[in-house]
Image (cartoon, rainbow, N blue to C red):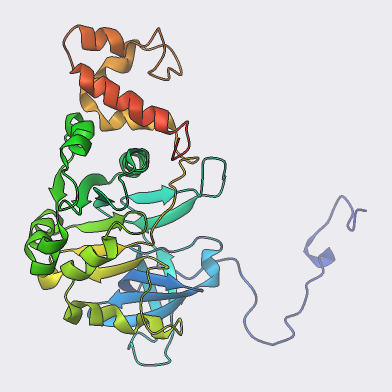
Length: 336
């Protein structure tokens, strides 16, 4: 039903009074140009713990951000009480543009995309050589997620005292992925941690791996107790009093040389959110050969131009095999 006629003017419009007597409602959001910059260290039940300069500040997301959520690694703008004192609460009013995003789904049929960490430079895929046995399909899936999200992969192979690394490394040799091999004895003596730390210098590194591979042991060796204290009181918010790797947690390396993001152990790494066509960009030597591919080429079909590209000597056949193996892992479940 039409409330007003065709020739409505200002006098015909009814204005709803503001009963509270304060300023009228507006959809214009404040710019908060004086907001302080911070980094999200962990998230728990709506409370985000951030590093603002040298202070740990607990904050909540402003309503004006809507459904946009901040995750560990996000660079954010905060207002309110930034003192970091007990029982104070700041407000996150802006989430800065991300340089990289690591995403996963629960499985390949799950449409809900989970952002694990933002703004990480590399993804350390921690895998035990034995006890538990390595799972190459899970490694492949983590590699696809890293390439898609803009992170450089790093293989960290643990428990080399139980099994040699040669067979597993042979699978990934043609991908030119940096790797570090560790043993339990080396971790206890600190030698392995030093070699891993060399790969993390000046970078934000997210660590992933399924339960039992020694990921948390490695993170504890990398980040001394005095550095963990910086974020140790974070879990006073959760009531647990300590970090149990049930949510991602960013920890600073010694000397401000970089950050380690410890993530919960994963049983599967779904790739429902990934467009397979973007995986090719991680293979620049093959990417140039796709110009002759048919439209919407899967790069694993009879008319794919990559076969001729490799046959003409432009790229190593092993590289094409590695690409197709990673693309195929998007179509099958972990454990198949």
